[in-house]
Length: 140
Image (cartoon, rainbow, N blue to C red; front, side):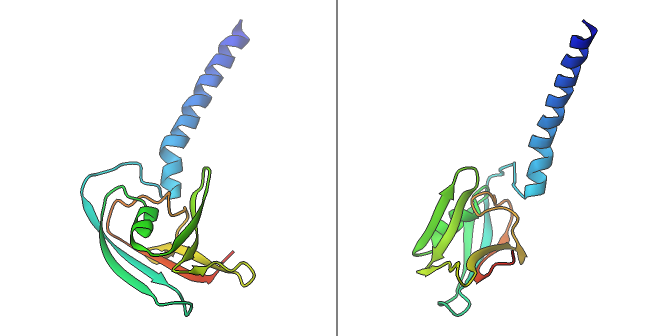
């Protein structure tokens, strides 16, 4: 009887800890914004072809809570991507310039000059930011 009582407490404590990790700590570490304030913010979109095409520079007004993928999809011609369950969109081609696995060239995604730690469809925009997509060798 005493053992069942402890098992129940341990289970309850485990559920509480996992809930805290999932709802508070995980979103902070991934850069995912969990709140959505209304209004628009300005995004500076920069697409760097690095000699493979003509670079693109745009200032765009977007609604808070939009994803980086929303911005790219709505403002880039000839966009190709693959969608993976649980991961979201993975950009394979922009303006006819496709990733080249043999040469190690891919479309990398930066926010405010730093390589993003989440995918384009996971990064929610809650403030004015600089978004860069750069066709370059992978750092991995």
